[in-house]
Image (cartoon, rainbow, N blue to C red; front, side, top):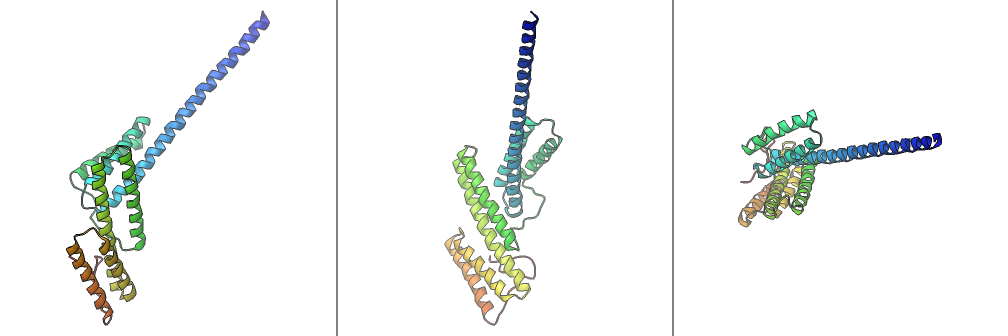
Length: 239
């Protein structure tokens, strides 16, 4: 009798131990899954914020900015469902909700400056816009963005990307003009002209602007004349 009781006791202890281990394992698995989801949402928010912050600097319109902001809020709310007591996430939701209202009203906290004055800044912006195009493609494939909206945003990005390249090279040409650096001045004028030739503009407008840049280049080669605006604005601003 005592032997049977001892065996039952041992079996009971083993079963309880297994049950506790299973509960602990499941709890750890749940915590790991939750952490993985939160990390993924955090990564999404960081990427979307980088796209939005770039557009706030260079894009005068708000459609794409608002689209990105809505997705930031969506990711934030999903994160709060996983961690409702997270103080930082709650604060972020308040801030980003206020930003959403701001953008929907056509307001931003910075001035537009649709050009960069170094190749490094320009290249970084171009890479971000390439990544944004991939993100929009994924959202279209996941039925989070209609085909018509996707086409509209893609066209818009190509337009601002082209304008950014042109204006940035003109701005750099201006900087080198102020330094009396003929070689770099001409180099960036040529880059601006090359970008202009590929720009999605009306043929007549494009041809006229290409002609104006060509004239600036030719004038700089005749006796080394350099044209500078004397500010950080693009030197060969063509209207």
